[in-house]
Amino acid sequence: MKTEKNTRIDFPKTAALILDELCRMGEVDESQMKVALLKCSKWQALGMPPHEIVSKCELSHKITEKAIDQNYMMNWLSRRTGIDIAEIDPLKIKVEEVTSVMSLAFAKRNGIIAIDVNKFGIVIAMSWPNESAWKASLEQVVNKPIRLVLATPEQIRRYQQEFYNLSFSVKGAKQEHLQRSDVHNFEQLIELGGRGDVDANDKHVVRIVDWLLQYAFEQRASDIHIEPRRDFGYVRFRIDGMLHPVQEFSAAVTSAVIARLKILGRMDVAEKRKPLDGRIKTKIQEGKEVELRLSTLPTAFGEKMVARIFDPDVVLMGFSQLGLTQKDEATWNQFIRQPNGIVLVTGPTGSGKTTTLYTTLKLLANSSVNVCTIEDPIEMVEGAFNQVQVQKETGVEFASGVRALLRQDPDIIMIGEIRDKETADMAIQAALTGHLVLSTLHTNDAPTAVSRLLELGVQAFLINATLNGVMAQRLVRTLCPHCKQKVPANPNECDIFKFHLNIDLPQELYEPVGCKICRQTGFLGRAGIYEIMPFGKELSKAVSQNQPLEELKRIAQAQDMTTLTMAGLHKVLQGETNLQELMRVVGIITTDLDEISE
Image (tube, rainbow, N blue to C red; front, side, top):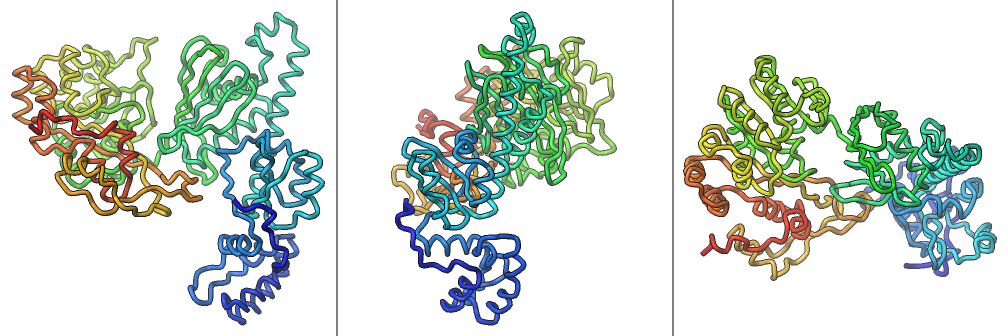
């Protein structure tokens, strides 16, 4: 990376001089420049850097006709000064470290912010190359070398505000903890949890939680993990299926943040010895309502909390938006349009089963049918159907809940999960008495769902009489459409495509690159891959004959079932994901059914 030693000082340092150079270089015409000069005075009065002023003049390139916006001007400035552009990623920044380098007043006065502190020195992002007034003095104070990078003025202003506000709140909460520790005697500390915990309603804690939630929504996180350790607590976000470290708090602040979320979720703050569940409904900056499902778990160092974030718009999505092909959607519709029977969705936790079921129920629910669910817990509250929460304390469990629902004249029943024989028997009984039953199982693929039902003690003839079909699913990260690029295909992967899809390896495949939109990961969002198995006569016969699981898989594939691997490979060919991501999700892709191929 280039350093400030490469900085050239012979570059235009006012908006008027920048416009003049753009005109001389043929990037804007003279008439554009004259109009822009009249606009400059308004922005100059606000103290904006010269290149930001130019970017606001609504200019377009004379030849390409592309807008001369902030990105264009940042690239121009980088070329003219030799200083690299940095994309500030808050997920990779230790806020308390970078805010300790300088005061907020100093940072604002010079339009700078520290973004990394390491053993080699300090990286400081600046909105305009004008370091002569502050760099030497700051290096003396911090006693470390400083490396300079460029960042957009909007990023500098935004993160100055966010980082220092968070830092002030954390320091304030720590101070509150110290004060409480000083005034409480030993017996009082024991009552407070042993550490003189910070008040969950303290204004500093409130600000930290508000920032945490807003930041999670902004980063498209699906889960917030708050994990206590011996001396510290860690916050991680799950984004596109992968966990990312976000922040580190002291043990007392971590405890206070969890307590604050428990208060918002109407949970018992004093109960820390057993798992608890709660939910929060809040709004993001755009005004859209978002639900969070809270879950706590006692660990060796205190309560751990996971907040799962649900976007209500998800249930408004169609099957094609979830990733189903036209063939898959047609098959799935055949399952769910039956007047009775059982339809199962399988997969591990976090594979999108609930989203699929809610989308299905939303499609089926209308004024002429009674749709009821029994869930543990209710993932998303939806007004289109009747939802029942499992409550073991009052005797409402899956089996007893289904028994009660059958007396409520239902047409369609959704059971959150079939976990035991009693629940499976109730689902079978509901299907036999003319109801359509949708539920989930934790199995790796669709054929294994049949084996799982047999293991639970369901008799083969009852499975044959009621099972409409099974769908297994996974979620794979999709390649960022803004930066993905084609690369020559690896010849070593030829056998994979030949075995699973019976096609030759294409010459080129898409691979991730990384850009500021996808935070340099190369992936943006997730899509489902599906394995849909209709339960026809051949499978029914095999179940009656107590055939092994491998035979069930062979029959299902012989009946044109698309496996998870095959579905994923189709997405690889379409440029939606890559082979490495597919292997991460479904496992090592090998010719795992060699016996079948023989």
